[in-house]
Amino acid sequence: MASASSLLCDEQLLCSICLSVFTEPVSTPCGHNYCKTCITGYWASRNQIQCPLCMKKFRRRPQLQVNTGFRDIVEHFHKKGEKDQDGILVKPGEVSCDICLVPKLKAQKTCLVCLASYCQLHLEPHQRVPTLKKHQLMDPVSNLDDRVCKKHDKMLELFCRKEQMCVCFMCLKDDHAMHEVVPLEHVFRERKVQLDCVTSEMKMKENTKSRTIKELKYSIDQSKKESEKELVDIAEVFTALVVSWRRNQVELIKEIQKKQKVAQKQAEDHVTQLELEVAEMRRRRSEMEQLSQTEDHLHLLQSWPSLYLFDHQSHSNPPFTSDLTDFSQRSEVAKVKKAVAQMEKTLSNEMEMLINMVKLPDAAENQMPEWFPREVWTPPRDKLMMIQQNDAIDVTLDAYTANSKLMVSEDGKQLTLRNGLPSLTTMFGRRFQLQAFVLGKEGFSSGRFYYEVQVSGSKQWLLGVAKESVNRENLFIPVPCFGCWTYFGSHIHSLNFNPDTGMNAPLQRTQKVGVFVDYEKGEVSFYDVEARTLMHSYSECAFIETIPAFKAFLYFLVGASSNSRPKLYPFFGLYEDDFENTLVITPVVHPT
Image (cartoon, rainbow, N blue to C red; front, side, top):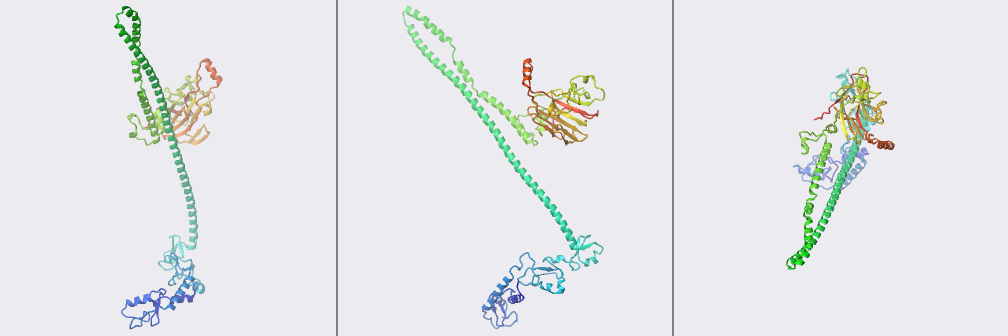
């Protein structure tokens, strides 16, 4: 830290013209010191040559020489001052001492009474004088004007809770006399606690969002990897298809070449045979020509039988020209072109459908292939629409399988609970005994089928499919292990009981349910037709049965069929003894 004497010397080492430390100090005849550049410039701008301090005039411009001794003293004290002030000189952005001259020192405290900032040297009176010791000191601040009341020119030391503003003591007598006013320190502590709470909450939200960002990025990366893998798999599938086609092409070419070689060999053998016959005919003809010139009657008559027999045999053999014609017409090009055109059309149709499925629901009418009849074909909006368009069937209830509590309408499309005794039509037959179940008339042992049922008129209902061999006498809970794949809906409890898993799940109020079955894939799906959403799905269903060997042998002995693909029948059920419960089988309407 610089001492008082050193600071005094520093003030004396300042040029009175530029107010900076002397640079090349020179002395005038009157004894005052200036920077050589400063005094020379001063005299050059004046008509008279005089001293700037004592105003003594000179007849002519003095010859100025650098005072080397004084220059060394200036440099010495300047370097010493920089060394003493190292670490306390004010830096950009810091609060400077209001008392220090150039160079400014860094302020150590700010006095809220004096409204000034002091370095350690100039702060010394506040630490020594009793009256100054009572002043309120704080860490140095630069915005002292903002801490003073604009109206009363007093420090802002209080906070008005009603007006939510800082005030001084004089404000209590004017505008805030009846208001609740507290010291700034109290509000400071309150706001600091609030700030800590808000900061902590923001940090929690920040961490949550950061985790969400990480999860999303991870999900995006995984989706990208899966998409790339799917694209590779698709490329492999199409590559395998092309390889298969090329392999079939090679086999086809081999077969055609084989047939051509056989036909060519037969033709070449026949040509060889014909050449031999032609040579023999030439020899015979030569003999006949010689014989025709003879005059020997006996020789001519003796040679005639052999000549006549050869001539008869040569004309009896059919020519081979027809075989050659048939061979030329057996070209496989037309067959191949026709078959390839048919396969190309089929493959094009399948690919177009596949592309439409991928682009759902953005498939547009103008993107349809020309081979689709535009007046009747509508691009499917979703998977359910494709099912409705391609797999819808007409289902009719089988009244002879209905439980005695159920009543089936005459057209077989409506199911209700019977109010009264069962009629004769339901007293006999292969009906369900324990629960209010009924089957459809039509059974299916292959392919895909889909039907829709209006369930809005029933409080508790059951839909699905069941095997033909289902036990109608003892069936109580229709679950897959008993040969039933069903979906239970309840509008009373707003819950859905999944018999496959035994779990309850929330169920929205469904108006119409669609049941879809893919026999080959072993799938049963249930759709909310109005919402067009999948409610539940069974997969890997055991539709196909394995018949025991002994049973299959008995079937063989009696000549009966041992088909292991049992039929699946539409399955319906009503619960809750409410005679207004109704299920209606509705026609499948293709949405537009």
